Image (cartoon, rainbow, N blue to C red):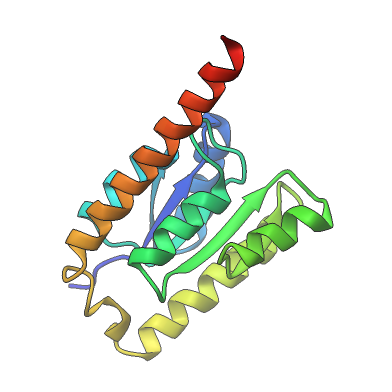
Length: 165
């Protein structure tokens, strides 16, 4: 019995999540799990393993770039893709500087995104799943990343409040 590869897609737009789930699950043998925000994504990452991470640039509680950095802290070899409606060169550069492996623009680049996901999964299969070996070892560091994300969001909220008052 083989386990289907797992993709975590983080986007706060329900329609985008449904589209990604349909597009990848119907054409590829993968399970697509969705989360609407960075906090939920990091909670899930601390408990579960994913083969590929696809992140929206703009999330309600953080940015895809900050989430990418948090994932990189605990999953050094993770395959992370930013999939965003933002098409400016500066946004692409920020994503790559933040640790993303690839950057694609919604909805135009969906076929390219699918091809890259397929390539990542083929690479994992060819290594005999060795990239999964350390999946359970870093739970503590994942929890620390969740705490850092929570702290950063709290500080951001406090700064906003102090500007208002």
